[in-house]
Structures are given as structure tokens and as C-alpha cells.
Length: 403
Image 1 (cartoon, rainbow, N blue to C red):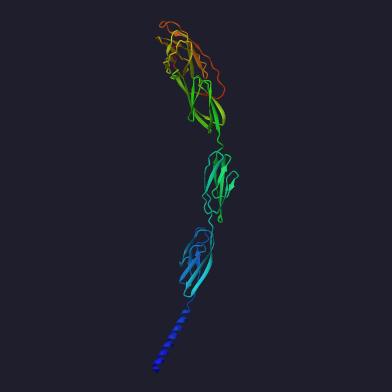
Image 2 (cartoon, helix red, strand yellow):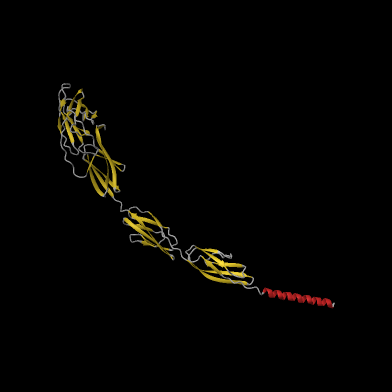
């Protein structure tokens, strides 16, 4: 019994000794020491900083990078700072001996801004509103100078120009990292003008004239006006010719195709033809109706018109023809197709808008002889004002005998 008691006490003593020894061993664990270094700082954002953890007696780590991003637990993390500034980075190292924290300042430079912009709505007449779209980067504020004394601090402004011209628009982008400026050219047109254009018919037949799809008829000696033509110039086309009572063309068609300047206000033009042409009138006082009619008979530019000129003593408008020194006009008798009357040596005045009046007075019976009549050839004065010539040229004629 005594031996059993001694054995129990021995067990208690040994257990106590082991417990005391164990407690003494746990309390001797060294506390951790948190420390770190870093590289890659002091550069413009976005900036990647690498952290080197040199903590001791630690088994886990918690990193706070100071920019509001989630904590990191890697031993040696890398972190990208999106913006410039000074950040307090804290490392907490934890081990069996406790925990330790250390904080250091990491400086990230602010990025340098780059100014850029586009615009739309320019190249129109005043008043002209232009929209500016800002494509600057790394900027926190902006200053616009629109080149006409106007300015703005909006990011994407609109500006209305009230005068035409070329304007140099300047944008300055600003940030803590510095300033950046860019200049671009904006063109604004002067106010749109309109012009009233009047055309005067100085020839002998109707002129049909078209501008911008609008066709008007100008009777001889009269005018038409095209109102409020826009722009700085306009192209027009016009034509005229002699015609029968049913509208059949007689002689040549004269054409005008020109571009005119539009200065604003009102301008006027006379439509005329040059001395390479003439207009023909005919009066038949003879004994026979005349048909057909040949003008420039025997020349390379001979015209044949199958018209009837009755012997009614009425002066008829005939048509336009080429003018030559050797021009011959021949008209046959309707009732005697092998007989004719003719005119030569017409003595043109060689002026713009010239005309010739031919009168047939030959009263012999058909078949007795060829007829001959006389020429009434007035020289018309030229009208004042802007003259627009029908400018088509023709080849030189070959002289033929007058008969």
C-alpha cells in the first residue's frame, strides 16, 4: 500500500514538471518583426510597385496599399497605382509570437496630360454653332480659347461663331502632373448671299434659258429675272432659233452655256450673238410664192429650209445663219421649181446681232429668166450693258460665183 502511494506521488510530480517545462517553452517564441522595401515608385501613374517582404518570425501577412483596394496576403506582392499621390502602405506580419505592423510612404507621380479634341459643324455660314469633343487624357480641368474672344472651361463645349473667318481654337488640358496645349483651325463661312440675275433678249427670236432646273422664256426685246440665286456662281444654258408658225426650226440653233459670278444684289446680262452669224428677214413682193429657201448656197455650210414664203408683202422672221463675204441666198418659185430668185453681195456690217432684210420684187412669169431682188440691210446699234455672246465659230467659206 505504501509503495502504491509513493508511485502515485511520483506520477504527479513528473506530470507537473512536464507541464511547467512545456509552459516555459511556449512563452519563449520570439515576436515577429514587420519590415519591407519597395521598387518602381516615383513614376507617373499607372505605376506598378513591387514590395519585398523582409519580415521575421512571421507566418502570414496583410498588406494595405493605401488606395482603397482590397488587402493582399502575398509575401511579396506587386501593386498597380492608377493615380498619382502619396500612399501610406502598411504591412502586418503575424507569427506564433504575435503580430507586428510597419507603414511607409509610397509616392506615385501624377501623369502628364495629353490634350486632344475634334469638332463638327464648322464650314457653314454664320451664325454657326460648332461642337467640340474633348479626347484629352490624364487631365482634371480644361481651358478653351475659341479664337474669337470666347472661352470655356467645360469638358465638351459648344460655341456659336457670329462672324466668318479662320479661327485658331486652343485647348489646354490641366492636371497635377502638368499642362498640355493643342491648337486646331476652324473655318466659318461668311453669311450666305443671294443674287437676282436678269437676262435681256437682244436677238430676234424667243430665248429659252435654264438655271438650277428652272426654265424661262424670254421674248425678243424683253427680260426675265431669276431671283435669290444662292452661292458665289451659277451655270446656265440657253438657246434660240427661228421657227415656223407650227414650231419647226428654221436655220441654225444658237446656244449659250456659261458660268457667271454671283456677287449678291442684282446683276443683268444681254444675250447676243457675234458677227459670224446673221439673222434673216424676208419679204416677198413678187409674183410667186417661194420654196424651198437656200442660205449660203454652194458653200460647205449651206442650209436648206423647206418653208413657204408667200407673195403677200409681209416681212417674215426667218432664222439664223452663218455670215460669209460670199453668202448667197436662193429661193425657188413654188409654181416653177426650176426657177429661182437670189441675192449675193449682202454687205454685212460685221457687228454683233447683225440682221439682213431681203425683199423679192421679181414679177416675171415662171421660166422666163432667173430673178434678182434687192437687199435692205440695216446695221443695228449695240445695246449697253453686259454682253453674253453666242460664241460658236465656223469654218471659212469657199467663194462661189454670185448667181
